Length: 340
Image (cartoon, rainbow, N blue to C red; front, side):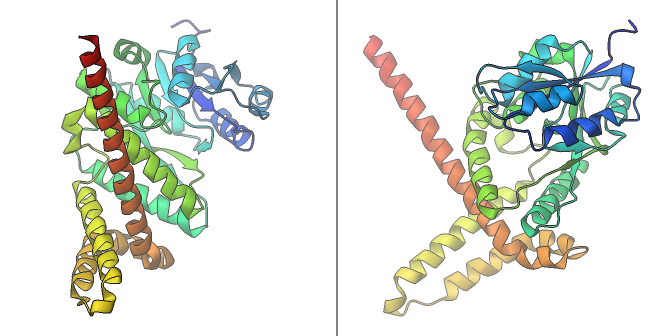
């Protein structure tokens, strides 16, 4: 191998990330992997703050985009100038552990492995952030039980550059869920992705419940478009427990039942349907509560309400996403009809 050519290229898309980019780059500089084996590329996605200056000051190669185009376009731009055969993705609000890059390199040392997906850690003490970490850990337990991985998040993953280029890179029309969509596409093309729980990065999770719920709504809305492109993933993917879809239905039933009860209280409507749907929902989320209670009782106590809010946000986002797709379908149909 050319001694001047790195083995790995780490691509970090960054937008308005001046508060977090330096800790991220310090963590990437302090790796057990020899520094000559990797390069760090920060793609400043049209930031108006000092993201690019601080990244350059920390020693990263900085690619400046003239306008904000989204993380998919930023990663694609970084891919163009990357020199490594292996492409590592992480985010500007992440702080990888010292073994992060060495762990990814070791997984892809096996030529039959085309990708690896790592995990989040958190140092935060805010209740919502601790809940989010437990939520991810619940997903990781689900992923660990799968025979293969088809869902890799770009906060901690690695692919072969040739495979990404062959797949056409990230879909820049997706403002979120672009990493999920590309991992689905890569797996469909025959790329084998491994779950790598030994590859870890600290992350700054949402601490404000409103920000968290808006994020969930947005993910669900755009996930509809991803699933329209990959309909087989509606039933199952390696990241999303099937029971979560049941939870969303149960949360919607509980909400509707409670609303109907509130509207009809003056008619002395029985409260039993509300009690029944509440008990059903609590039974579904009991495993999450039980796991959280092992090391964080406050999160376990608040988990049912937080999960209910999350499931309602996901359901609402899914409904809006379906309406978006219906509008697109109607527009295309009308356009074709007018063409005739």
